[in-house]
Image (cartoon, rainbow, N blue to C red; front, side):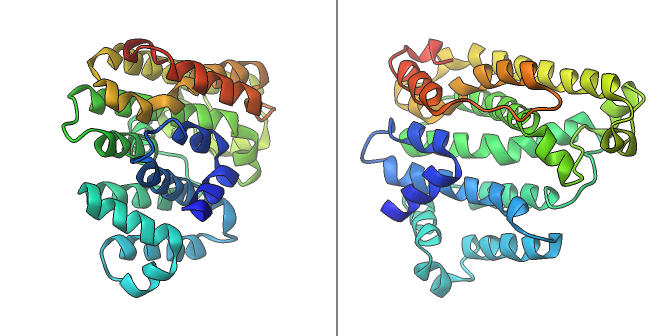
Amino acid sequence: MDAIAAQLREADSAQFFATLFIPEDKRPAVMALRAFATEMARIPWLVSEPMLGEIRLQWWHEVLAGERSGEAVANPLAAALVQTVETYNLPVAALQGLIAARVEDLYADPPPTLNDLEGRLGECHSVPYRLAAMILSQQASAAVADVAGHGGVAEGLADLLARWPLLLRRGRVMIPQDVMAQYDLTRESVLAGTAPEATRRALGHLAALAQKHRAQAAASLAGLNASEAPAFLPLTLVEPLLSRVERTMPDGVASLPQWRVQFDLWRASKRDVARLF
């Protein structure tokens, strides 16, 4: 588990530090789940061409399907993930849906519609929160779906906006086509930078949507069981990240300093469930 913790800390320190607030007996399982989700997010950034990414993502799909049991045993993260799925009876289909959504990240085409983007972000970001809550509570509350669903989409939008310049350098325009049409934009004009004000307004459209989803997630917090609350601690970072995005968008990469991440997570861990973020 030390290797998995180190992997998660290097890839996503916020998720790593948030996992330290998980009860000790459940921490290895949540660590494995989050390390897996982070690894799936990294693959599109690590490969030089989409086919190489598809091969790596397909390997993980087959691990979850039980088709790579020998290889999985030799991979610490794969072995821990399989054990977590079996121990807590997590839905394999949800994890495979996350993998399928990351396949789309390998390609440069903008999502057709805003609903498509929200659905993709839900698969990538909401699923890990929902499954973490399942690990922490044998009887998941009805509010888990809303907090994970809206919170995950808010987090995904914030992450997209925070890394906007990096995405552009890779030729990826994540503004949905229907949103671009509202602002008379095309993928080509966004990449060329010929319509900076319209691009800024389109990104502001996504930022406002992120705030809306964050508020909807927050409104559902009161329905969570206290035992489920630690699963959602990383969502407390969405609002401060969006504030940074507003100051740097569209030309700068937004990030939170490490001290702010750790302080905000610690402070949120002391709050009542209904005021988690």
